[in-house]
Length: 312
Image (cartoon, rainbow, N blue to C red):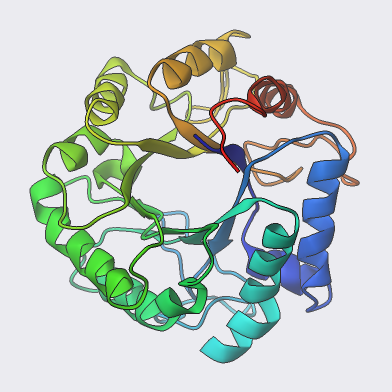
């Protein structure tokens, strides 16, 4: 079982750091300096456009896949696949490796994979066709096939053939890397996926948990999945308030209640997110020296479990 944290979009860290990958390494250093003890760092790679329903996101330095619908107010750097790998992703993975940790290469799309207007499912295949063999010999690198298929109008049976294409694409070039498999509704149905698994080896199933979606049905989905296969909570977090509909936790025990369920199901996790402005934020200040309630809770959990359930 691995426990750790997630970076924000590495293209944003690169661009806001003066188009220099050292800014990503600096963020990792600050995570470690404040006392967080991760086994694993999740590395989000944003394509040109992340629709996310009515809340689109545009990385200032995206991986060059998919169409760009970025407005003039959100300019984007033009990088080739090779340049993105050489300047942004590989230095990040290598630094995480140097620090003795696992790395999750997360294709961070949030979209309906069934959408006939956009090409999100095909874009994911394009990404992995290029990327899968780049880290095939890294024993510490895990591939997260697709961050969050929205697909609220479809069930797992409809998404499964697309997920199979991503898995087959990865396996054609990388026979051994663990693959994290998503599910429908922003990865809230891992039980459905694990109960009717895609074909492939070294598969894990993910769940993305925030106070606004962590209901009894979701918890039952996790329990079903955990009885069949490893579960990796690649996103979870909260903001300690009762006003944010999705992220807000009005109870100070939300974190400990969540931990009880995760530990009981043997779940791995990466907390989202190591930033002060992206939410739910683990840091409360711009110099990344002070943790929020969420950051402090995650830090304690990491410390408690740092030497358990863990084989180097």
